[in-house]
Image 1 (cartoon, helix red, strand yellow):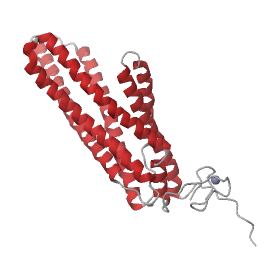
Image 2: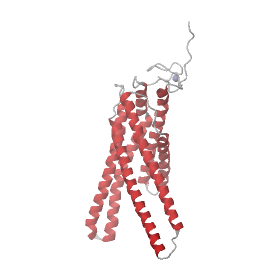
Image 3: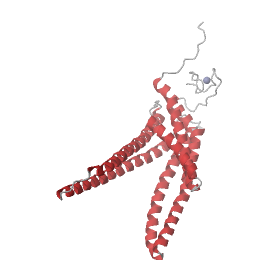
Image 4: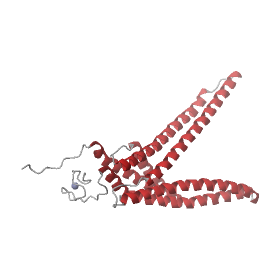
Length: 297
Ligand SMILES: [Zn+2]
């Protein structure tokens, strides 16, 4: 295996003879060993803890949203609005519960992965946690695609309406203001690009977990985790933290939630960067400096 500190090729499970660094060996398979050591690392633990705390906090915010909605509606429509209040809060609660359930499952997947990677009794790693997270990310991706189809349909209808209105105006002898349509076209274009970037991002997450799971099952090294996905996750983490700190004074609960989810994203990204970095030499078998050899007798 490769010493993570000095980069020389060393015997597995023993202290590095070149720098003295002791490497904890999780698996005799080098690729699974990388997966387990990253999954059991303090960085991944921090991510799992921060994510779990985010989920716990979201329980509070859903109940406060429902309470706030209740107050607003009762105030606006009086006590007679109670039936409406109940049905609307029913929807909000249902939506909130589904959202929280998905987050709880992702958190559970992270903990199963952490525990399984930390287990030194076996050199294998359970893929249950990875599969749970991957399934939820697939659902997420499918939902985004469905929403995209609806959004495109909506803008197509809107565009057709504008064209029709312009035609009617011309039929009446008027001159349609072509430049008025330009901002709408620009907004549609920008929205489409943003949606495509989000789809690429979510697909990158699914692909990464598919490959990590395959490595866990087969022991074949694979470093292919999209840089776009990793960089965007890292940036997301940083921006959420900044936003959370700014929000801390006006809405402390939301601010803390943003900071925690930012920390989780940031550390997940760090784990993925480390995973990719350690997996690359295993995949290509190159770039590893050869240790100085003892003189031949
Ligand atoms: Zn070393």
